[in-house]
Structure formats: C-alpha cells, structure tokens
Amino acid sequence: MRTPSDGFPQLRSSDRCPCLSGDTFGECCGRLLEGVTQAPTAVQLMRSRYSAFVVGDAEYLLATWHPSTRPHTLELDPAMRWYRLDIVRREGGGPLDRDGIVEFRAYYRDGERGERGEQQETSTFVRDGGRWRYVSAVA
Image 1 (cartoon, one colour):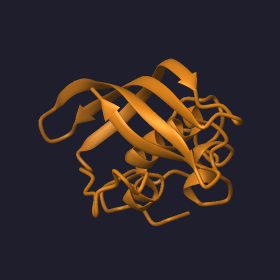
Image 2 (spheres, rainbow, N blue to C red):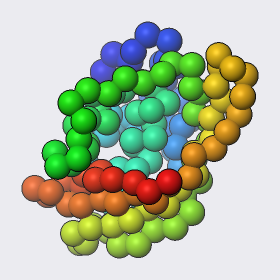
Image 3 (cartoon, rainbow, N blue to C red):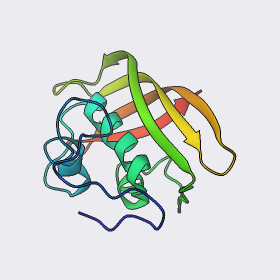
C-alpha cells in the first residue's frame, strides 16, 4: 500500500472499508489504491477515490483523474475526516459502458474547526484506455 500523507488515518486490510461497501479495506478499495486491480465500474472508482481522500492518497487521486482535467498537484487537508459516503444515483458507468455519472454525498468533520458538513456532487467518468477515469463534478 502507498504511504499515506502525515496526519491521515492508516488502514489495515482487515479494517472496514471507508466507502461503506460492507467489505474490508483489503477486499474493496485497498486493492485499487495498491494497484492490484482496476475499478470495473464508475461507482467502484468513485468509492475508491473517496477512500483515497480518507487515507490521504493524493497519488491515487491524480492517477485516476482524466488527463484533460487533472491538476498538476493536489494537496489534501489531514484535518478533514471523511466518515460516510452515500451513493445517491448512477447512470451508466458499467463494465461495458464508455461513460458514467455518479451522484453522491460525502460527510466530513473538520478537526481544526470542529464543524461537520457534507459535500454533494454529481461526478462524470469516462473509460479511457480500458480504465475508468474521473473527469469532473458539479456540486
């Protein structure tokens, strides 16, 4: 597994996956973050990207971002503690699709300010070179 940034939680393979799939981290998003396998669907890529935010894996986030919209760098805030992901809606994004849309809500606590909040987005994904890539989002 990639080394997480300072201040982020370190998850073991046997820990519950932060994407709340019901599987362990090692059976779910951990395999994707480690590069053992690729996301078969846009929803699974979305879940793994959420988990990457949880553990501070900016490298994975950049690697799964479509080159046409990917920033050069990405700084993650270790004070942001993501604790819940709800998939609201999905369109396409299956194993045989070329594109997909995933609407989700992600819940967080800001450790510095002690505030709680949620982020709701509708994200677009495309299959590029046989791999799902995140393209953009509308909040």
